[in-house]
Length: 453
Image (tube, rainbow, N blue to C red; front, top):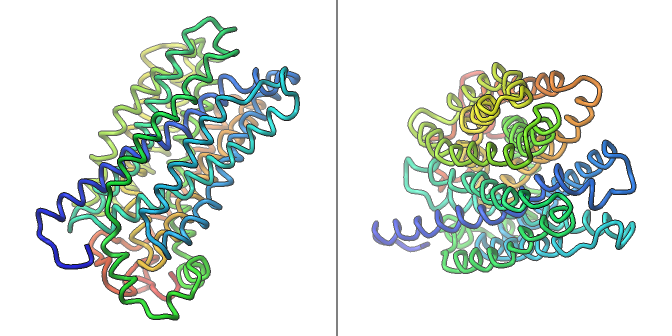
């Protein structure tokens, strides 16, 4: 890929990258988001059975948060080696780690059998999951952006993000199938089967990724880099040269992770306790919205290739401000129709508009020599603050004020997103192969502020 190649061969290589990114992240997020649903429905009963229901639920979300806190660590570790040794190698390792951790979660004995060792082991495996996912997204997004054809970066990179709802659908449907069991059997062993199935799925993912080629821009960068550039640690280099870009990437997208995380976790509790819906009904509604979200992500990403990342993401953020309260009101109302409508407004309408262009939006901010590290940090900080912290914040807010303060919290995050994306330079037309080209904020004359990026 570093030499001149035919257009047809390049298209084939791009298709391999897209297939690898999509199916790889689908399997990764099947594992990661399956844990999110299980934290809402199962873990309080299985691993914190010695505590009250409310305390057990909060602690289940604390274990959920542990995985999100580990994601930036995974981004740093795998970003470092991905920027040094290549994107493809790291993506194979992250896939294997995620599959092993998820399989073992399905094997952890309950608190009644293993005592304090049970929740401790659960937290440890969740951290391994977080490290794996933290390292995976940056590699998948980076290799997709770097391999994309001209004018299609947003859509090509969006396949990475499309894997998240696809994995959520797969995990939710499998869990919903077993949730139809007798409650005692489901809590005793039924919930474990979806985690054990990840051992099979990860083998498929590894085979797909093994067939993928390395990033052409990475190979060209390695051939041209001087000895000083090769010696400089990617983490140090990206923080020193583009620290502002990391902050902008995180704050510009944190809202979509918060909404996604709350609809995958808090909404399950809200829909079953306040709305009176069954576990299966809420999981299926979430799955339907996630299926629609896959197409919506492609739609919004394609729009961002035509009109720019910023207008599309600002539209999604404004919609989030307006619809935050109605979405949660619909989920708790008790109407099946409103349950589905709330999920659909939340996922394919609001969340997808911000999340769809985000892989390209974030990756375009960073230079090739440390794009894996920079994109990973920006994304994983956003996912930690949004998807990891938000369910815990929501559980605490809901305990004292119901869903209204939760909706206001989400609306406030989208308001932050509007401001941050508005001051960020558009990256759609950038030449990623050129040196020192990545944007961060606009200067007074409207040009990229590269020196402080």
